[in-house]
Structure formats: C-alpha cells, structure tokens
Length: 87
Ligand SMILES: [Zn+2]
Image (tube, rainbow, N blue to C red):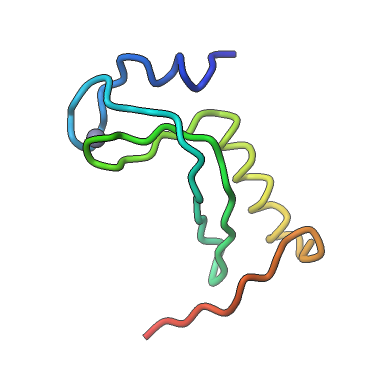
C-alpha cells in the first residue's frame, strides 16, 4: 500500500492546480452524518498554497469507522462535544 507521503509526492492540487505543494499534517476532519457531525483527527495531506486537504485510504477508513459508530448509535465510543445549531 502506498504511503501518504508517496501519494502526495508531485501531486497536482485539484483546487489550485499547483504541483508538489502538499505537506503531511494532523487535521481535524468533520464529517456530516444526517443532522449530526463526527470529527476525527487524521493524518492527511494539506496544500500549502490553498489549504485543500487530501485523504489517503487510511484516513478515509478512520473517518468511515467513526461514521459507522455514529450511525450504529455507539455513542459510548465517541465524545460528545456539544450541540450544533442552524440559523
Ligand atoms: Zn492547492
């Protein structure tokens, strides 16, 4: 399996079009699940030019696992961070 670093090497950013601008960072990814959201800290690529975030398969699976927990109602495995409001 390709590493995150290998995936990012020479990558052309889909948002800004620059090449080789990605660095590896720990980011907080927030995924909407119906009316709820779940936030996961994952290792991902971030474009130093425009801030676009690129997920590898490990990060995608980590996020999917959190989404599955939320969908399954496994709230004891998640931390409740507060309520969300929409105006
Ligand atoms: Zn970019």
